Each structure stands twice: as C-alpha cells, then as structure tokens.
Amino acid sequence: MGLLFNFVDQEKPQIEAALAPFNIPDFNQYAFLSDLSNTSATRAEAMSVPAIARARNIICGVLASLPIEMKTRDNSLVLTPKFFEQPDPRVMGSTVYAYTAEDLLFNGAAYWQIMSYDTTTNRPNQIQWISYTKVTEELDPLGQIVTGYMIDGKKVPNTGVGSLIVFSGLLLFDYKLVRNLSLLHRKHEDQ
Image (cartoon, rainbow, N blue to C red):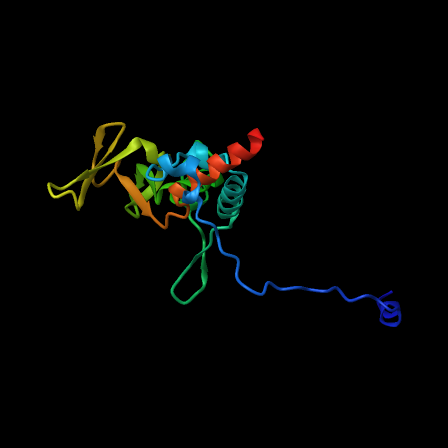
C-alpha cells in the first residue's frame, strides 16, 4: 500500500507560520477587572478555567502514575522500598503523589507528616499528606526564617514522628492572572 502512494499525485499540505510572535494581552487592562488586580485567586477559581483544570489534571495525573525507580550512584537499579510505592497505607500512592503535585503547582509547597519510622534504617516508612491550607509556618521574630510548623493551629515537632517533610517548588500559576482568566471565562459563559 505504501508503494502506491508514491505514484499517486497528492497535494502537499501548506504550513503557514506566524510572521510575528503572538503577544499575550494584559488582562489587567479591562475595566471590570481593575478592582481585583491586587488580590489572588483561589484554587476553585483556578479550576473553573478549563485550560488550567486540564493542565492540572494532565500534570498531576502523569506525575502520579510515573513508575518510581531507585538507582545507586553507579546507575544500577535497587529494589524500591514499599514506602515509595504507597507512602500512606490508607490510600493509593498515586493519590498522595497527585495531591502533592497539586499543592506544588498551586501553592509552591506541599507537606507530608511522618507517621512512623523504620527502626532499622531510621527513615520514614509511613506518612500522610497534609493539605497546604492546614499548615502554618512559625517564623523567627524578624519574620524571615521558618522555626516550626503548625497543623490546624497545633504545633508539630521539628523532628521525629509527627514532624513534617516539606516540599517546596515552583509556583506555576500566577493567581492574579488566574483570577482574571476566571472572570473572563465566567463573563464569556454569561453571554
């Protein structure tokens, strides 16, 4: 079949490229958004924008489903401890990883609370994911250095069982832009 296509006259697709780069408009220029330009969006507002919800689902879904492999320094595979496959025995590992990825995307930080340690390795063998909204940082008197954490207003230990594993990352979504996109989307739906 492939040989026949070489003898048949086929129209070649025309590919057109933009002559100039596309400029993203400044959403703060719209009058109905001006009063909200200094406030940040909530997760619910962000997820109301279809493109953001889709991006979140793709990113978190892919990250949660990736296989976890451990390697030594010489790049040989090591048996992955059960902890990495299912860090919280009460829920699937992919759920923990998806929630962790979401917190990193929307908030720039994620938290796991250590529930128990393996006495032979002195490493955590059970954790639970803690929602970003439940955690408060305790700061030094100058407000610059984190000295501890609280969950729902209760101080947690800095080390050992009950302490937090803190992940910090890149905040991917600018909440001012997200809020403006959410408002534009709602306005478009109302028309």
